[in-house]
Image (cartoon, rainbow, N blue to C red; front, side, top):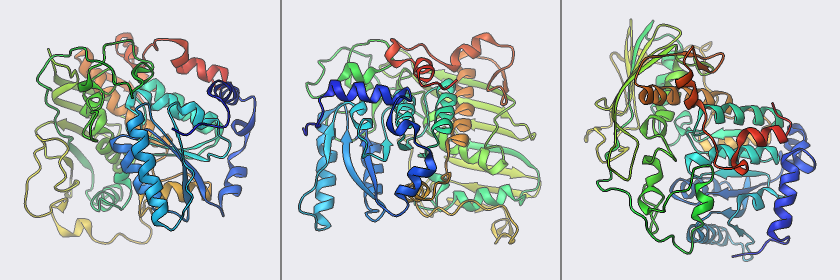
Length: 468
């Protein structure tokens, strides 16, 4: 493992000073940094080198004219070394003989580097908010995987921080970009421009998680893995590989299906399709009026998230939105003038995903005219050939990317409101302006969670940084 020029203690003291606005990049206006980066390569660090981290890194590293990776970071040293090897081999294949990429365990050491301009954050959901908030406070531009945060309170906090520090944040909602999915943009543009008339219902399928099939049991913590730090804000619990990530390979991690770390399909894939629904209906800065859920949760299993689900939401414009595990994965918009369906085609979310084999039916409509060319004065989405390239180009242009925090925070809130309805077991009224439930203290208690120590307290971090 490469050793930073400053020792870890010194670097962490420095980054803490940065996070409270005492020095350096935390006070640098975005437009000044954009001017510096407009005609130069963006120095990028990869934080989180697992399944999605590897995917995002390899997608981004191809844009050698726009960026250069200078660091990788992971609490699992095997994963950090594998990412490092991938990058070194990539740059050597481009004819570079000397490749200097540092390996880190603690992301705070990465944020302390003044030469790092941007970070890709691909850590588990329960870590999204803190890493992204501290990155924004350190003046770094951010690409963060979806769901943008674990909780509603975290989404609000991250949005406030990004706005205050004026950095660029792209959420990993890649269905907003043209590659690799061709169906979502034409479908949502058609709906947004009134091709369906009044949209009566939107039916959303997001796949279904099945239990692991065994109870949790304590296992020895691998010597290459800093498990206590990985837990972060979550209370201490025994290590079980089944609810963390596989020690061999980059298979689907168990934290996705463990409620302390991720909330299950409702935010995992719900973040993708709910985002598309809000976008299409013109509600990307809003949310539902009411939400009601019927659900089963996993029991006597190492995994703890919901399984079967049925969620109904009433939107401010009168549209009824239904999520059900029996629906085909994707979005089915039904209006007074017809219907449009869009999906990822044959890609399966889980082994139980109901998508059919055969011809690609990822984009279809009740009549061809619904998807015909839009007029010149139509509402059109920002051009975005590739989601990662859009992020890099947005940094250089000092503009909001295709999936900004102002909108991804609302998608998270809508998904989390559905999960909270699952937890309390009743219909809830959501106030999208106040970003909380109306007259329901129990439901509102789920909007945030108590961190296990001050080190992981988002509110305390924001207070120290002077962000209310």
